[in-house]
Amino acid sequence: MTSLVILDRDGVINQDSDAYVKHVDEWIPIPGSAAAIARLCKAGYQVAVATNQSGLARGYFSQADLDAMHAKMTALVEAEGGSFAHIAWCPHGPDDHCDCRKPLPGLIDQIERALGVSAAGAPMVGDSQRDLEAGIARNCVPVLVRTGKGVKTEPKLAQHSELNRAQVFDNLSDWVDHFLAEKS
Image (cartoon, rainbow, N blue to C red; front, side, top):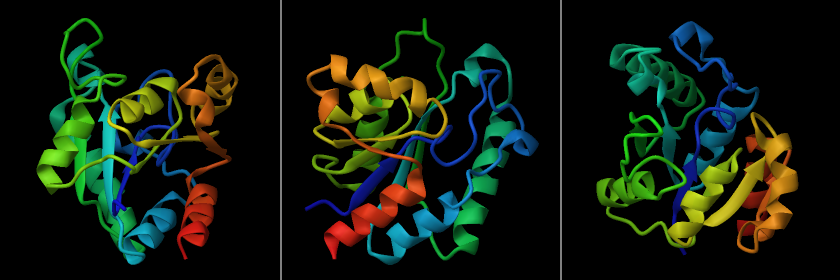
């Protein structure tokens, strides 16, 4: 059994925006997400983040802006008694042909290398099809939350043989409650 949980960021931990989350003031946590992450940590799980951040390549925000958003996210989780084992982000745009932009699994590969663990069997919690596809490519367990783009993504799951086995929850906190109860 892996002790790793991988989360997408925008739409899972914080509110998403079609206009991109560009500044720390626009980074607004989804209620209960920081406490849910802390509950995972307290139960012995390493929590990592795998997030596409093409706004960097597009010039919508700077690395300093992204660092400030991640510092805010980290501080909120630490205030609840948790921490992030690793935060991996793809700074590339869709036409940059990188190996880390989800649905490719490069961010998960980075997490595995950074933590010295296998992601196989780890939950990959996301709000989009590309999040789940990246996880499936590394034998993660797909979990969809209905926050962010999740409501729009949910009907698409049935069309894909690998995605139709995804568990679906209203939000990260609901999934964590279910996951920890299942493991106890």
